[in-house]
Image (cartoon, rainbow, N blue to C red; front, top):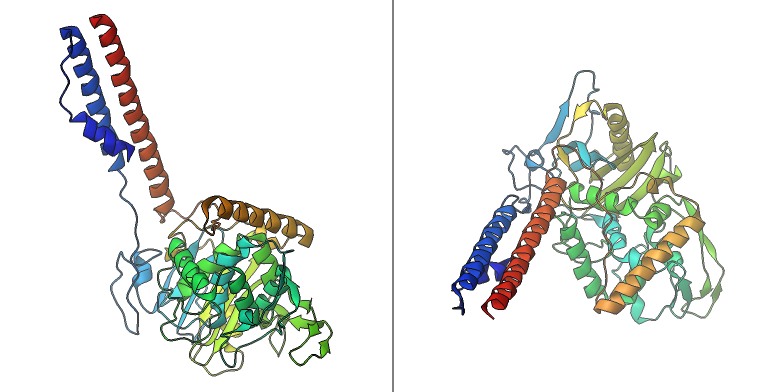
Length: 454
């Protein structure tokens, strides 16, 4: 805006002065201003803005890669996408999921994928986007007394943790209900605390776009089957990566068991506190699934339309990988966990020895390598409370809900977003400085000219 005003003033006709020397000085100053304005405009046109349009809904077959896909042109392709080098093991056989990805959480490199932008119902894996959107808004120690309105509108057959109206819970209790029991009741309470369910849905949609997750369309904050609600394996990896940059998120998704508060139920009967267990069997090792070595979390889901869905993250050494699996078709028991585990195994064997097929760095999302180590709960608590206080202060100042975005980490070479963003910032800085300098020169020379004319 300042550049535009400076450019406009550059084309104003000079005003007559009392002395020719003064007129000459002012004309020279305006010429300098014009030159600076042109330089600023040139700087601003050096780096065009990067905008990734959402790809079309994909099906089977092949398609030529296109530049419109978030994550890189190759990510627009269909079928299995992989670029192995010599000595890299073959991808696991028998992968039956309609869509999947395996990616490096720190660098954002997508090591391999199948139909990464195919739009599919996400089931409860969409709760990761809900958490990335809402979790920073409230300190974990804040208490809330649940009302009947908080629990209204929960879909029939939803998974529930057992939240009771007229009982008081901490925010941490509710988040454990979300992540361990996949409780849609806990989601709805937090959404009402956030303002309302529709408001939360709109904020989740905005957050998805901010993160470059263009395949996602949010209808319900809990992932309950709703017409038009879709996401993709690529977008789910983006949400998980953004979440793992938040200490409290990393702590919740890695919690296998916890106690949930009791209280009086709807019939007036007192219910004692009870244990809850994470429904992610890759984390707990339940129901015949072997607990994955180094597993962090993140979230599983199931609905009739979505089938089984899973976001799984694991760490070995200083490397953290994220595997997303959507709707395996093999019909084998626990197929979603088996296929995610095999993809993680392959990813750890191939990482550093294969060229990436894309990047999660489509927008400013990042992963802090230390956050996924699930620090002590006291440290998480302090950091979460500090984040929430900052969010509340921002809301008080702006009258709107503030959103926290993690600072971007350095991405892979093929991602030009970070470079374009820094170049654009530099261009604006240079252009603004030149424009301000030109304006200052005009004022100074006018004063000198006026002094001489007197």
